[in-house]
Length: 273
Image (cartoon, rainbow, N blue to C red; front, top):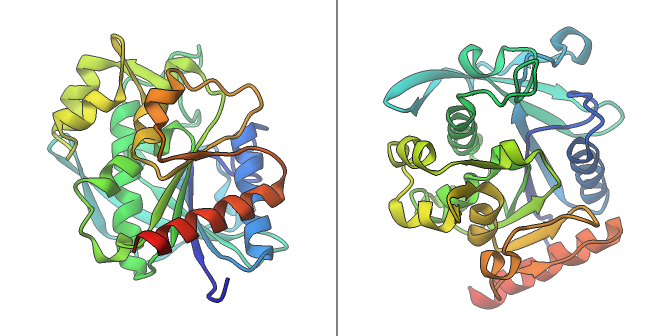
């Protein structure tokens, strides 16, 4: 490809910062490094969870990016942006921080494994924060690649409320599906509708996340994505055909497949332009 393409990687986990030994943090890291080594320009955004050791990883605040407020459920929450370099690479990781949502030591659940009651609020804050941060970058991505349930509202936002944002006008969206805790990836339909309708998600969009009597975050994210990657051999996207639809490519395999998948996605974008 003639130009140096830009990939925005949005992930809830990333090795070595989260240290959960999860598939997400390993794939997000290896994928990002591989794509940069193959000529792509990569930027990475993730939450600054309380379990991330700022001193060890040398995080520092990016003052020119911080200071924004993100609206969630009629309340404004300050967004602080921090950055660290990934050892042994030329990549930088940007961390979205807020004491109300991310200071706690556990990432997604209480000590007994019960999901935090405000996980939907945290997801809304993170996804909106990603969009506002990239706008401040002034850096237009060619592909936005989302990893994990906490990123699942991003494709819906970018295809709807933010669809006219110049910075995202030519971007394609990829969502990677992982075998995650079902208590995190499926949520109560009534509470999801109540929260998201006040946060730029329409009733029509909510219906596309609906799976029987619950909300399936993977299903809605897949619907609004231009490409879906099943990142586990046994990944199970419920109602996969209706959720994904004929417009979406699915591919899983070795790392070279990611470059081929990316190139095919960009060719489709150029042909439809």
